[in-house]
Length: 283
Image 1 (cartoon, rainbow, N blue to C red):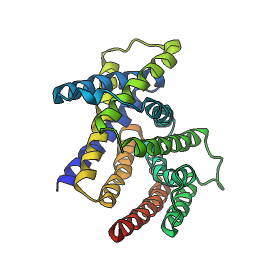
Image 2: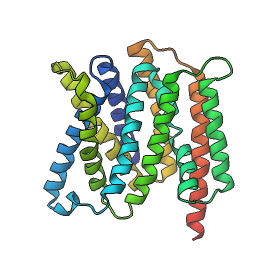
Image 3: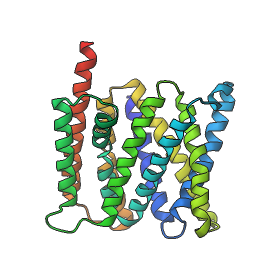
């Protein structure tokens, strides 16, 4: 039941973060939102590290790897937040499920990871899911959908860097440098359109910053106590949950193709995870 608790908290965090981004859309520049997200992240993670008494977590010997990771992660965050302002919330979350598929492709190309039949099937199902969601034969694919797909690609690249960093870095160090490196990037890019938030906007900015941290913490906690397949399956519940939010609060139409397409991607991800489990069990 603990995994259900952590994933329920993660789903709530993701949904609140999405609502916060939608509420700020058009009033606060996306770069400025990312800047404040990083400020909150630096303060919270620095406090946690300080309280832990292990000052070594503030240091790293792999600053170039952290920088490369966070350039891609920042770009992914930007595309995701822009998508939340332009597309139905459910479509953004559905397209985000392509991240594991992109990760497979990037890892195969740059890390020379083997291409197994399971991975190939996962990529095919992922591509089929994207096709079902975007329906390219019946309409022109919107620029906003393309932005979210590119954001997912950037997230996947960042994940590959994270896999490398996880061999030597504590997760708190990774998160701390994520916020520390992205903070000046967000500040620089937001200066030309800087807006002084009003009290309500401050509340939403804080909500975005805090839920961004809590979402990652909860997913990580769930991964530590349960199989990845269970976590991925529970994470899929983000889609119907955010669809309900979109319908109730923003009068968005519900598209069955989103669930079908995301379901194909989920199935592909589970096939890939089951393949990894078989390999681990045989070694």
